[in-house]
Structure formats: C-alpha cells, structure tokens
Image 1 (tube, helix red, strand yellow):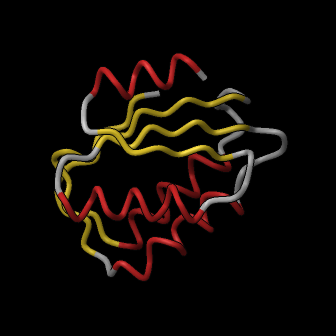
Image 2 (cartoon, helix red, strand yellow):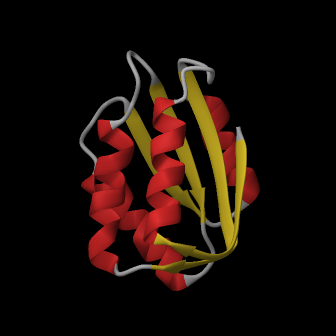
Length: 111
C-alpha cells in the first residue's frame, strides 16, 4: 500500500490516518505500507509523536501485522519518524525510516 502525505499535516489528521489504517478490516492481515512524506510538513509538537505511535499500535485490528516504511527527507519529519520507530515495542507494528524510495521498497519486500 502506497500512501503519499502532502502539505501541512496536523495532529488530528495524522492520528485519524493511523487509526483508519490500523482498524480497517478490508486491508490485508499482513499490511506493508510505503508512506511518502517528502512533500509533507508535520504541524504538531514533537511530544505528540509518541501518542500517534500509541494510537497506531492500540488500534491494530485482530492478528494484523503492519510493516511501515516511512520515507522522509526533511530533518524534522525524519526525527519524528525515528522517534516513532524507537518508541514502538509492539511486534505487530514494525516501522523504519528511509531517505530513498528504492531502499524503502527493498526493505518492505524483504519482510
């Protein structure tokens, strides 16, 4: 699943996006997401990043596993992605930050 985030993304939008992905029973049980945020600006405080990660993990439906490649190029969005990556300890959610599309795709396909 490819997702492109563009423009200003506030906390409400990001948390709704995470909740929707986690809860959607129409998506495959093993979900691979390439999230391209190279054209996005995250418009929320850094202290909200852990909360967004908690929303994603707490809403994972059933036995779903989410493999999430976070494509980032800007320093702030990269830092937010790395915080999310490091804060997670749920085996059902595996997120990793990348700076190039090809490396992100290679990682997703190897999982």
